[in-house]
Image (cartoon, rainbow, N blue to C red; front, side):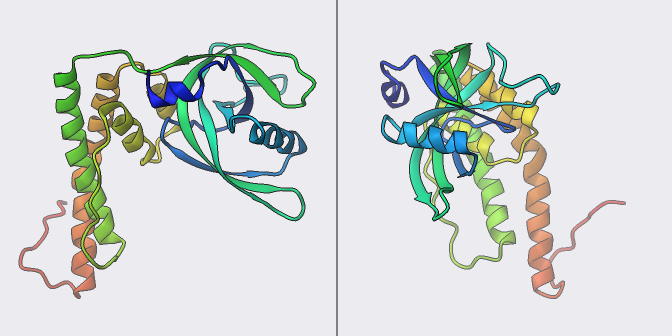
Length: 234
C-alpha cells in the first residue's frame, strides 16, 4: 500500500470541489475560497483529514450542476490556509490520489459530496518503466536548464531530484500548460509506461525549441556576439 492510499484508508466519500481544471497527483494547487458553500466545505474538511475531491467540471448546458458519475478527479490535501478578515481564504493544496465518482450523496451541506472509487497505476515491467523514466528525466532537465537560462537567473542550475516513475510522470505533466482534455487523459491513464511515453513525446517536441530560444536569448544579452551563428531557417 502506498503512502497516498494510506491517507484515504477508511474513506469512501468526500466533499467535491468542481472546477474547470484538472488536478494531478503530486501537483500543487493554490485556491482562493470565497463562495459561502466552499467556505463551509473548507471548515468541514479542516476538522477532519483535510481532504476533498477536485473534479473537472465544464457544464455542457445550463442544466448541468455537477461532474458526471464515472468521471475522474483527484483528492486534494489542504496543506496551508490563510483566512482573510472578510471570511475568504487563500489555501494551498496538493494532489494525493485519483478517484472515479461512483455516485453523489445527499447531505445537509450546500456543497457536493460523492462516493468515490480510488485508484493508482497498475503494476508493470519495472525495467521498461525505469528506462522510460530515465529518458523523461533527462529531457525534462534539458528543458528546465534552458528555462533557467532564459530567466536570467545567476548561479548554477539547482540539482533536481529524480522521483519514482509514476510520481515523475505526474510531476513532469503538471509542469506544462497542457490543454484540459490532454491533462484529463493523463489523469485517467492507469499505465505509468503509457503516461511516460506521452510525456516523452511532449518533451521531444519542445526541448530543441526551448534550447534554441535560450541560446538566442543568451546571444541577445551579449549584443549578438557569438562564436557560431544560428541557422533559423527560411
